[in-house]
Amino acid sequence: MTTADNTQKSRGRLNDAVGTVISDKMDKTISVKIYRLVKHPRYSKYIRRTSVFKAHDETNQAKTGDKVRIYETRPMSKTKRWKLAEVIEKAGLVDQEANS
Image (cartoon, rainbow, N blue to C red; front, top):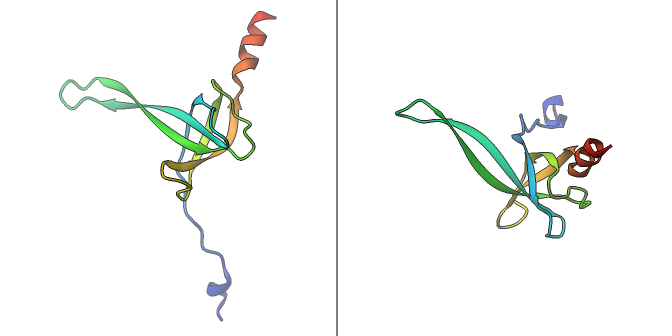
């Protein structure tokens, strides 16, 4: 065997996205809403479009309203193709700090 056979192949750059959790009612699954700007072909104005992705949350740590980072992975179910990478900002902490 050569050394090239022993090295682990890199999977390349993983697609990731930052969005807001809109639902955490499922077990180990969250729904994340992602916003993106798309330029209108005729009027050249930018329009905000949304997408909703189901993401795997192994520890059920993300709650509704949290800002999270997710990354693309293998299909885990019929609609689940993403995994939770990190919780960037908790929803409840922002409200508590504003009241203090």
